[in-house]
Amino acid sequence: MKILTILGARPQFIKAAALSREFRNYIEIKEVIIHTGQHFDQNMSDIFFEEMEISKPDYFLDINSLNHGAMTGRMMEKIEVIIENENPDYVLVYGDTNSTLAGAITAKKRHVKLIHVEAGLRSFNMNMPEEINRILTDRISDYLFCPTPQAQKNLIKEGFENFDCKIEVVGDVMEDAVRFYSKKANKVSKILTENKLEEYVLCTIHRQENTDDLDRLTQIINAVNEISSTIQVVLPLHPRTKAIISKNNLQLNAKIIDPVGYLDMLNLTKNAKLVLTDSGGLQKEAFMLKKFCITLRDETEWVELIENEVNFLAGADTKKIVSLALNKLKTTFTCDKNLYGGGKASEKIVEYLLKTT
Ligand code: UDP
Figure 1 (spheres, rainbow, N blue to C red):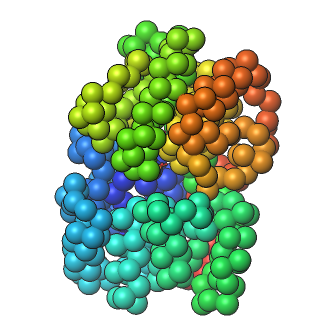
Figure 2 (figure 1 turned 120 degrees about the horizontal axis):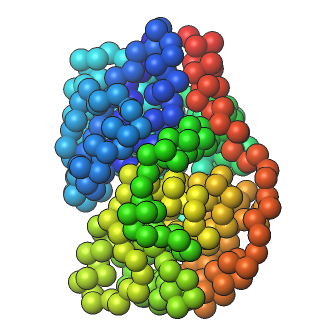
């Protein structure tokens, strides 16, 4: 069984690390990897491949720093040639990036069976490029592997039961990754000692709806500055956010560090007192590592975290972010529910594919 996997962005490297590891246990599965190059930093992308021991990409497309249309179009052009040469049984895409959509459309038009891992998520905010990517990818996928029962419900509500596709709830491959790599992170990561970190809040800000809206970004930064007067805030700063902060001369009082590899990120999360983020993946990692998370968005795809009161939506409202943060810093995290499948998602996906073919 030949599977052509399309990767290009940070969260996809992490998800693929878990699933590729499982693929390698089976001689009947051959995985060919395309790295589109969408990730913002080539060095950093190499670090992800090395530290997580993902097989080196068979193809590197080097497509980045373009507008959505140009980026998606160029990826499709190159992916189509590779599909023609490789003739895979399946194309596998993860999540909701432009690489996901480019791979999905191209595969489907070449009549190759399409697998979507992390299917069925919805923010119901059509202004998010990610929402558009995931809806379109889901609609043309043959195999939709959902991380949660809620994701499956979203698909059913949209009528997917009437479409010619298979929907399976398998859990979240990200939990597989957290479980596997946090052991390695304990041994390898030196991020805490290198930065002399003790008591701190971990923060990330990179989503376009925050970085490209100066009012939202200013409100979030004001909140970070206020929280910093109580506890240190550590912020691995995404280059997009960094550029906008510097262009607008915004004052950010936090310990700014460069974006870090996954093992360092796990260690940073594990030892934080609290997480503030607009990232999708980090919201779940915070939960898996037993930290409260204040989400700097107006909605989230991971609604089970909100229902279980371990994640709180604060939008870009300074007052709300600060008061939630100060409150959660005083609260003990006790939730030990299994919301994401317990680290068995990769196993279930492979079992399913082997049974189906
Ligand atoms: N992450 C990382 N280094 C960083 C910031 C984030 O390894 O400096 C990891 C984080 O732990 C999570 C993933 O990147 O697993 C989330 O990626 P991102 O926030 O870019 O995307 P999203 O999940 O919002 O799609």
